[in-house]
Image 1 (tube, one colour):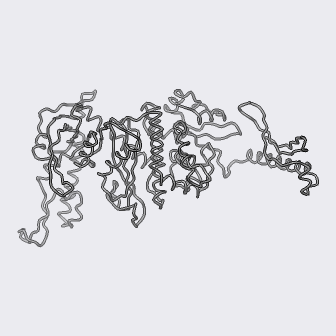
Image 2 (tube, rainbow, N blue to C red; image 1 turned 120 degrees about the vertical axis):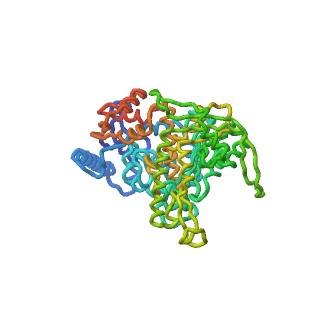
Image 3 (cartoon, rainbow, N blue to C red; image 1 turned 180 degrees about the vertical axis):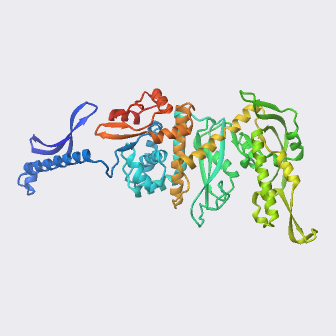
Length: 570
């Protein structure tokens, strides 16, 4: 590349411009473009410049000299401030993100702001950076985004402003993505999967959003809770954030109602959730909306007649693996079951619902649960021996009985006597390994219902991706809008990853393999137009290369190769 002074003669006089020559890979040859317009010679002379042509000829020489010096420094540089390494493994997520054409709708949204940067580009850069190297927002800005192959232009202050903006509008942005995903891939809401989790914040004081509640990790810090909804193919379709001290049970109703309204989803869906969300109000809400449900139910809370049916050996069918080993045992029944609830007036009511109930017994789960019961019993015995306080028993308290007694062992209102509860221990071991699934879908077979319920592992995996692969916690942001914006970035990263995994790769690869590729596929620049591929060979890279026809296994890569990756359409 070099600079030169272009002199154009026309009726008005001689017009000066500084031009730069460069290599155009499209033409495969040299090309020119305007670098700096200057003006007419006679007008410059009127402003006091004696010889404009000589003056700007010297400026062109200075520009060329600076370029040669910088070029020489680039060749001599061994270790410098700017790394020659670039992160490129995010390109499949970019391909999908670009193909959804959400940018035009977010650009319309942005017209209501005075931002001097593009919000969609900023959010996309944060998604790609979160996928390739999750870290704090300041470290992301300083260390990760500069390593993305494409240039992104926004300041750190603009990043925080944009994060707060998308956080305040997160429901609209999810609606935009849902609209575009539905148009390109389609959603299957014949079954929807729902679950909740929470994220802790390393702060001492609560606020209106970050509240102390029951943490999944048994931590004491303030929490923010998240409800996540997936479609039948386990593609995320909805997210709801709420204070950490609120009950999870109403969230399923709010999210599904909001999702249907915003995404214009009509027709019947079957809600699938674990026992933490199984309550009569959620069941009644589903039925009133014409929906169905598949929920798990604790066998420990069943009436004695139903527990007897669970423990009866008859009607169980063994499900075995290829080696003939029993994976689990299963049986089912259809009947009218009584639900008791309190209406709006505080009156106790009961209603009978026709349901199918399925019970499974898992030998490995039974062994694991009995081991845990024995551990808790031993803990209770040790605490009893050292006369520990009632508050110290924790979960093991369920296996002891606390009785007020005097020194002779007679019951009084004074000292507390602790006795092992043999009946509670016996019942707990008896029910170990059993699980129950209740459903309105009486036409579905037991294996179909079992499979549908156990697809919940996908939503648990989505939470695990957020918490481990994407480092969504702990969160150090302070404002509610920026906190929500942070979780929206995590949500969109999971969404794009799931679309890649399920629709593009046909569920042939696990998330671990996908994220390993995203983080490992890196290149290093060795000249202006040449890069080397630093990624280690893997079956995933070879498979993706065959599927896309991209040179992912090549050692040397040119600008044209990289542009093909970044602009590829699955």
